[in-house]
Image 1 (cartoon, rainbow, N blue to C red):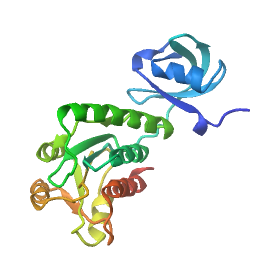
Image 2: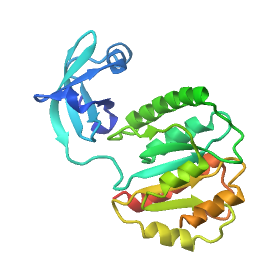
Image 3: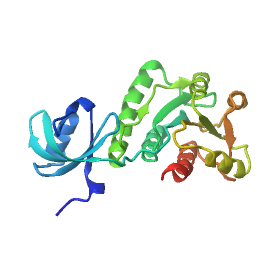
Image 4: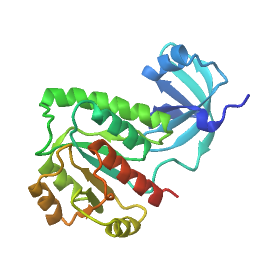
Length: 252
């Protein structure tokens, strides 16, 4: 029975691993294909390259350290949004960041930037941050495979709030959902005004919310303060709500 394309297993490779009508899958995916999925020659997989090209392929050869697959079709329609969305997430407590990254990737975020804010309970030194980011990047990769993304979103090293604001100031539109804002009309107006191709930043505060001077700094850079409704959302919910709104507006 032919496997539905939407249920094919997804793998990511470098552009250099595409050659003469074939793809070469290497690294940890080889063990996953051979020993976990127990796939055989003739089975179909979906393969995406680092520059966003997508292929449907048929496995032709399983080796000790690589899997070869013939390109059956190059997809002309990708799965990415027409806008790059950068999620600047205030560092949350416990393992909430893992959930946020997983769902943000599923909803189309292009990059996740953890941000150290005044009301963050979590404090990461350089060594802890490096280990956390490695773990978070693996979660992003797994979520990208599951959701059939055409690329793997990157998780950056945590930034100070001031540095995150400076980085976000280079984007076309920056949205700051803030619990003290009221009314959805302004939110609708800003979101509906976003054009395809524009880069978008989203700032989400930690459990304790934004400090007043953090909001003042965002305002000084002409970032858009928005309401997400009359209810107060948890930090792990707010970013996903904003991403869902953007996906509805932008995904054609």
